[in-house]
Image (cartoon, rainbow, N blue to C red):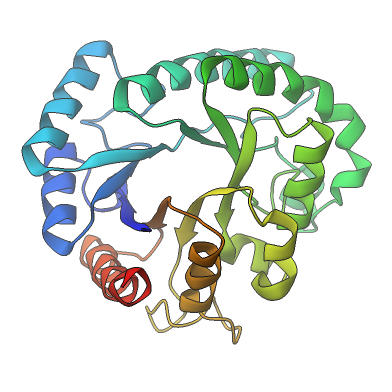
Length: 269
């Protein structure tokens, strides 16, 4: 069964309110990032965690993924990299506290994209950033969690092809894919069949964004539908969550949840 999920901070900056509204719309899980009573996942305390656990229990929801910012830093700025290492250690603690083993993350900023809106092929940077990611992959494996790389054009991994390249280079241990289908499509990769063939069996989480009509009927302006994508994942044994993200207003986000729930009812049977 694929579980309907939503980024809580895009529904409300008050976690209690976000979970209550999301569950009422049909979500079973949340992805936590910010909006945690004026804090985010890198700044919440153990007391905040307990408060969040109480909220989740009250509404019958769970945390599916830790939406960490790990890797959204410049790989040549060692102080930033060191800070993100510390962030990841905390993300592991949070994953254990919330009963998930999935930590979303990234593979450092792509300077060329941020300056010229042109993604640099991972091949040009793989040897440079691989030694920086190996300790994190090892840390994840030892802790029983996975760092799920999200493809994003302004980072070193923009597509599923590049995510697979990184996972292979890291030996496939402690790492997986958070498939943001729209991000990879925006980087020039058709989701089906192209993108999915690279990450089949490696996807641990999915992000669902709207097309221009505020619908999940198609991936952006392509002819590929989210129903096709989610059915392909389910057929291959995927049992994770699909998160509504970047739909706009809180009401648009909740409408996205409702659309996703309706679709998953057909897919899950």
